Image 1 (cartoon, rainbow, N blue to C red):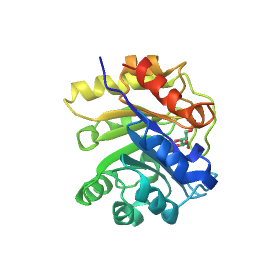
Image 2: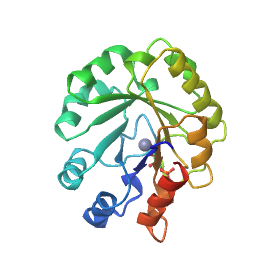
Image 3: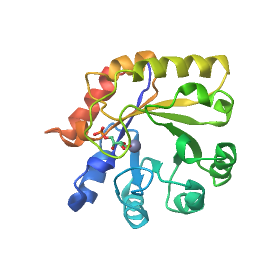
Image 4: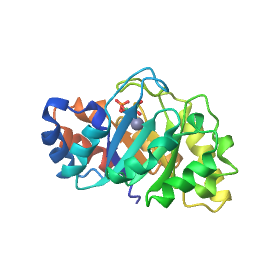
Length: 219
Ligand code: DX5
Ligand code: ZN
């Protein structure tokens, strides 16, 4: 049995009841908090920024997984470390010197993640996979919650898993976008280690039970 990590995406929480929703995650079987930072430039949406993350960090009792959908993320690496990020993920498409960016993230004591858009092949990561703690495969175009899952993702997970094994790396595979009880098992079977779920969790009548259900079906 596997210990698939479940990471509810706070983007889908009720921002007027943020503390309540954070406590829900704290008291659930969820493993990580997934935090989406969008700048309105890299993606066509603006989510929330540093003051909100600071407020979340104050209450969260689990690993904080920050997904930066911003241009030139190097500018803010030390800021996110100070705000309590444990995993910091940058977009492959937003980095001209990815190797340097990953070293800078690790130098701040965080795990270093790389996210790839649906149009980006996992193959571009071959020469850097050993330096990456986590690859986030986007299974929707980044920018919004509540979109539908792109089926091609299964192939990408499988290919990436093969690459990780071949390179004897410890890299985790995270899937982000449109995750539900319909695709969770197949994703884990293909090699996924971490599943992000936003609207599926927070749109449910019972988010705590929905998290437990995701945990159960991915064992
Ligand atoms: C999309 C974000 C995702 C989003 C997932 O740009 O990176 O983390 O919150 O939301 P759902 O699960 O609703 O697709
Ligand atoms: Zn995300």
